[in-house]
Image 1 (tube, rainbow, N blue to C red):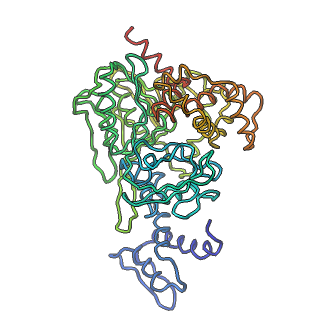
Image 2: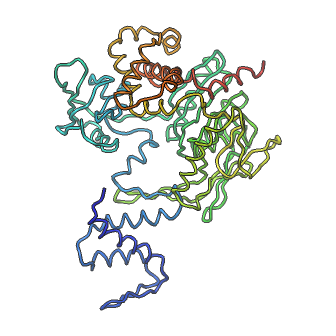
Image 3: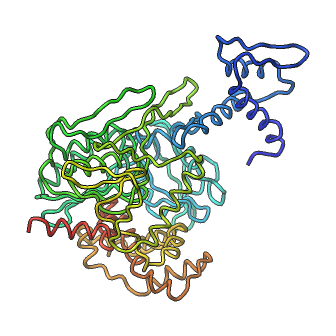
Length: 533
């Protein structure tokens, strides 16, 4: 948090910059000397230069400039953003398809950096680091028992390929800290979380984002599942926050015949541009459904909207986020960047699904929160079509605009589950920590399972495992009611099994087990299983 001194000195200057920028050209400053801003020059550049050259005190000029830019951009829309150099890779790496580091999934569990999973074939796995290890020291810098956020930790562990990092690790059962010399490498990041056959004829694909590698991953998954006999598909875009427009267009093209409109974009300074299906798609005739929820946004909404508006497949789940703005990125020599909204996108029927943001960014995200809360009051299979803008598809189906994609089949949040208790266990990493401890003590037994299906069908979730999770929660001041413990047993037990399956069979194992108790997934499975019979 900035000091009061910083606020007193810097805040008035930043506000003054923003106010002056909005003043008419030719405004005079009244002082011992009068300076006039030439109408042919950049006012912002001259103001910043004037401050740097003549301000009474020493200032961090770059910080002042960054704050002024951030304040300007905040007046535009919720998705335009100025990215300072130190945050650049945090913004861009997830969409590039790779990063340079040590290759682990981790969580901070009570101020300890805990390895949840060393990535297969990555530097950490090659060095011998295991799930459950706690990184205490990195290059003589103590990480444990410090209030560090994920971004700070990532900066410690990332680095150029070929560089080394010395790690000291606490491992349960070891007498002292273990030392590891890890050579950093380029780590691929995947946007496809899982793919597998659910039944003999139904496949499942989970996509977490739309990155530079998404379409290659997606097409490979489709081809592999088709070779295994897939005739129908469940495409899970829940929690998918979006990404590259071209990746969304290519995915929709997989399902649509040539010539079908996928999306179009236009803005004040961008002429209308239409995108049509062109390539022969591998899944143009088969049945499929798309799963969405309140956290499906942007590119995932483009895919869902294109499919819905072309009467091609069913959209199942809950109303999506409602982001219909297109950003372009301008990179600067100092490592910073500007993501600027340049257009809106429209679904084939003409829907712009962007939610209103005229009341400011805080109200914009508050509206999304209330959307989720309203779901808790919804009745099963309620369509909850609250939008007033109606559009008609070629087949005569009514679809809704004005904010997000409204699914064809709405499935509200299961209110019989005490999510308050479950979410607290999850956020405190108690379920995953229990899974790691169990895995490390029963590794030989667990590794006897052939695959995730074998594990799910034969692993016995004993009563004492759940009781131990509840006890661990109580030690972290999570004290549920008797009803909460009773009502949450199934979802918590399934989450524990899913975490074990992740340790055994990576993400595909996790999703295979987790989905067994997922209402939206099971509804879509039932629909596809009944079609064509």
